[in-house]
Length: 422
RNA sequence: GGAGGGAUAGCAUAGUCCGGCCGAAUGCGCGCGUCUCGAAAACGCGUGGGCAGAAAUGCCCCGUGGGUUCAAAUCCCACUCCCUCCGCCA
Image 1 (spheres, helix red, strand yellow):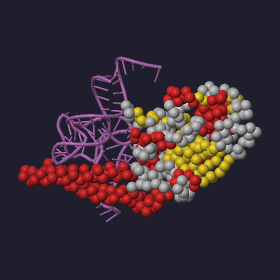
Image 2 (cartoon, chains in turn green, brown):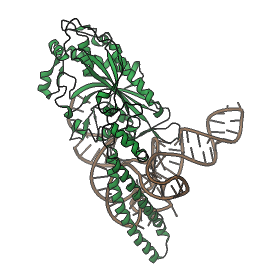
Image 3 (cartoon, rainbow, N blue to C red):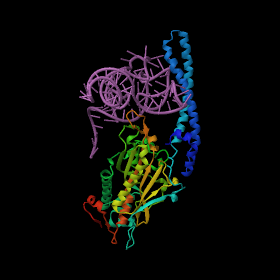
Image 4 (cartoon, rainbow, N blue to C red):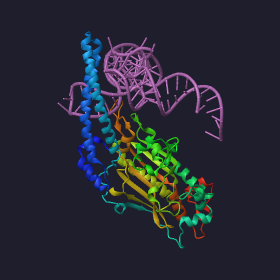
């Protein structure tokens, strides 16, 4: 959520940014509601002030007639207050609803462009392997090795679900454990095991609601929502908190499954395990002081790239242009791994700086000094990494002519020493 | 799921029966100061969040949302969460 004062004072700037973002938001309505809100507030507050002082005097007044007169007058004032408050409440509800629909603004320096074709490749690391045979896509490799079963996934849960089996399941578990250890031991993160369902407030806090509710699984009976990413429970750990001096920065890493209904993309990416309704992810979340967040984004991206480097898989870093930024991000980099079988760059991580956008929604603040005025923190997160696509990249990059898959060296201790899946 | 108890500031508690000098007392913690070579102790002063406003100031917040009243931490209704006991359970 943007600062209402900022919108009021920089309305033109905000409107221009919305054009760059290739989206719309009810800015004029916000400005108008804001004006009306402040008008009403002034009226209500002066009436309340009068009622407060008179009500305090009432019990001290000895003259019964005078007291009765004032009580009668205050009864009228009370009615006026009630009417104004009712309008104020309506205005505030509409204003809040409108503010929740305004996306974050792109940070200075973000390339301007209408869609993903204007994204910028920042760097490419590693040379794609040269094959002396035709590399296969994972949807051929996996079933042939008996480690990936699409049909039975569909049988038990429906389209876009799959089953990992044997060393396939083991490989994913190894990746999760290894990534968590890497981020904890080498990058300074604290491991978190959060609930995999959250209450509605959390989703407003990190920005999935109100705009992206149709992409979430929702349990009606208990009104719980299945997490679409660990970003939601982990960032919300500190919702409605004021962090004491010295608490920042906070670095968290969490493994969770992620659930997405993916209603919007039916028909796209239907083959393989690239886009399912349930997938595993290791997620890094940072909560930091505002002036450090841009530097923190750089190290966050590097932490994600470190996973690629250590796995020995070629990757590239892409900066999103304005038109391809998510609703909540001010700056966003994707890390993509090369997959030689399906012949595409796979997004394995998305690293964003949200500045104070989520902090405002979730009301996460900190103090610089004891007793200092609370300020909003900056929040960031990035995948470290998303499992199915790393599985794809490992399978396709490490495949051999006979259809077997070499286990990357760093994972072998987590695989009980297995060197080749065959 | 059943029965009972509870939610007040960073923490712990008082106030609620009986509405008004209670946006709130006390202790601890924390900050500043006095004393001290320094520290501890003692003593003194200070110490929540938010909104509107250029400011003065005003308004709101005693779990949340409603209601009654001139006036609500206090009375009424609903909800949420926590604790104890019982039931169920990996």
